Image 1: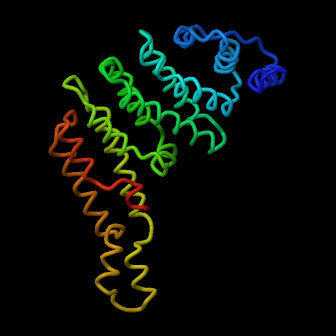
Image 2: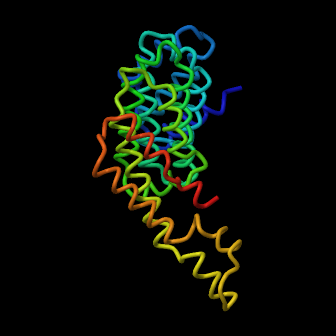
Image 3: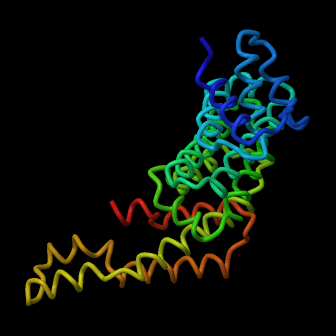
Length: 264
């Protein structure tokens, strides 16, 4: 019986009637996975789908999760591992940008987030080899459109938590410019978004037609417009005063509340 992945590719080829060969740029993924002979047909199906002009993006995102996350040890230990990770970053970003279904976009970001997280936390002594591709991933996320950023900011996987892990594992060779730039954009979006919504503190005050008890007012303070405006002012102070390639800048940025802290 043919696998579901093989059937998916056959259906895609039949529908669009084009010959598909694996793009040479994906040979590095084949090299990393060369030790798994039993997976080669399935892997080739995945790589052919990536090379197809009319991509089944849901299939691509699901398969990319398997090969990038399930076999991260092979990526970590292979000489061409960072180059393969770079390809997986591109695959995820391409799906975020071009998939039609919101669910596929979300799943692609989850894959990307966990791949960067693994690269940061699990590379161990190989971290310096992976720092350039980790920063490449941050830069690719930062270049996404505002609409795509809104999907990412509201995700369960919060960028500020990823930045915390990056700061914790940083080495003397670490470049902080990409992550600082990404976090600045993330916080700018977060504060602007919540300030565009109704102020919960004012709304609740109107509902009860009177002054709020101090304890109730304190509960609403972290999500009030006044507090969020204060956070945005702190962000602008950091931007104006701090070096954008400094771990100290990242530390200060991480003191600000992320999207998840405000909504939670």
